[in-house]
Image 1: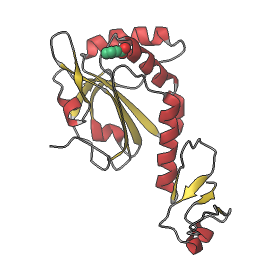
Image 2: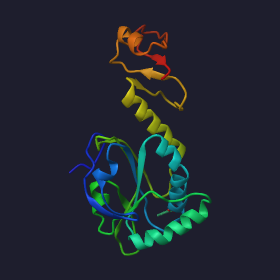
Image 3: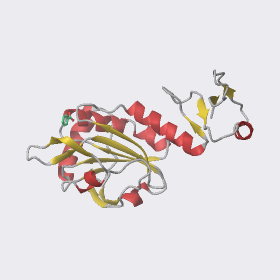
Image 4: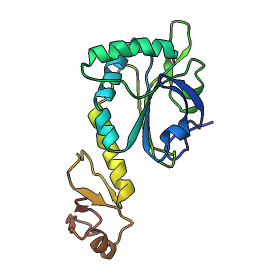
Length: 219
Ligand code: BEZ
C-alpha cells in the first residue's frame, strides 16, 4: 500500500502524548497542524530541533497552527528529555504534545518510517518527517529528511505561509519566495478575473512566448 502523501486524510488515532491522550482529528480541530517526527529521544539533532520548534511556537500560534511532535519512545522518557531540550534552548518551553509510539503504529500510518535507521534492539525508527495538515485533515505538504539532517524552522514557516496564501487567494509562490515578496497568480485565473480579484494590480512578465502566464501581485 503506498504511504500517506499529499491529499490524503491523516489517520484519526487515539495516541498517548506528553499532554495526555489525544484523538488526532479532534486535536487538529478547525486549525492547521504540523506533525513532525524524530528518530529518538536524547539524540543530538532531535534535541536541537524540538527546542527550535518550541522557540518558534509563537510564529505557529499566530498563523493558527497546532504542533504535534512524535518520537517512538514512551511518555516518561519524553518528559525527561524535555528537561534537556528546554535547558539547551534557553527560554523555550515545550508546550506542544509529543506523541509516544512504542508500537510503531503511528509512524507506519503516517509514512514516517526510516528505511535504514534502527534502535539498539533492531526496532524501526522514524525519519525526520513533517506533514502540514489543513483544517480538512488532509496532508498539504510533507518534508522527508534523514536522521543526519536537521530541519530549518524558517523554511517550515516559509512553506506554511505559502500554503496559507494559496488556500486564501488564487496564488502560488515562486522559486526562493520569502514572506512579504510578490506572489504569482494561478494559471486558472484569466486576466479579466485577475483584475477583479487583485484590485491592487498585477504585473505580467514579458516572455518570448507572449503567453502572459507569469503574473505577479502582492497579497
Ligand atoms: C540525532 O538526532 O542526532 C540523530 C538521531 C538518530 C540518528 C542519527 C542522529
